[in-house]
Length: 332
Image 1 (cartoon, one colour):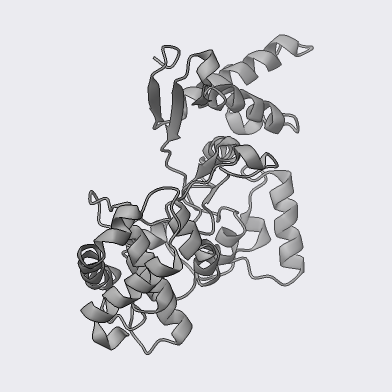
Image 2 (cartoon, rainbow, N blue to C red):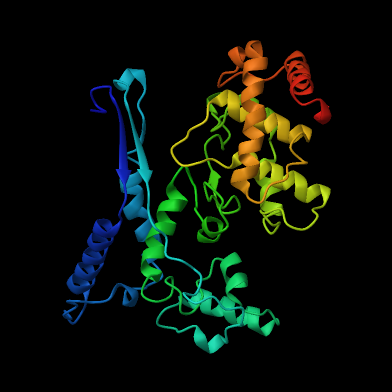
């Protein structure tokens, strides 16, 4: 279909077939080139851990992922988009604990040498090896899914992440906190638009969103430990972070228009949502989008001009401020 000029989306929801093929190739290669011709039937993948395996694994997955892309008009047009939806093994213990793990808990048969050396250096430096600290460092806690037979799966997933044009990582803790979508902004990124070819550079977001909130990801990452539920009295910074999170909250199966997203981010940046009071992000988001939907109706000329490449002018911003003032006099 792609070669015929069509646009194709391929969804990969399981790497097990590719993992099995990789393991078979590695075992076969070792058997063929072993001096003694050892029988390696049923060999565990964790035992095939040699220094060259990392680069070979990267080459293996690059041959799959590089098939995705858009073809030029001269070659017939068409495109292939590859979307990988893979469950990444948890780095957190099955039973939550705040106790520090001893170095002896990191078994050599499970963890790579480089990770073991890193753990020893951290312990020698007085760092408490708790599950929270280890998760921030990208190290699976002893007893978690990531260390109990799932480390090999993480290696394959990490290679795919490093080769892709970007990735979104959903965090189980955010799910429990009621964040939707539960995207970990610190661990998610887009590589689209990076590089030296400025003339060919594209961006993964609309111009108006980039104009309004160019540092949003960084602000949310820095404030990642800020509570997402308004309980005690919040500082001004915490109120702004809560407002950002409220406008990013999105119910499942209810996509928003570009105009709604732009106006919501505009109001959050201007501080109109800093005084949101709700027991949950869902409640705060519902209140915020009541105003946003009213603004869509109150400023139709601005909404009509909004498009992927359109940036708000000073007149547009003034019109939006006037719309808020007319709809919510106290916010002005």
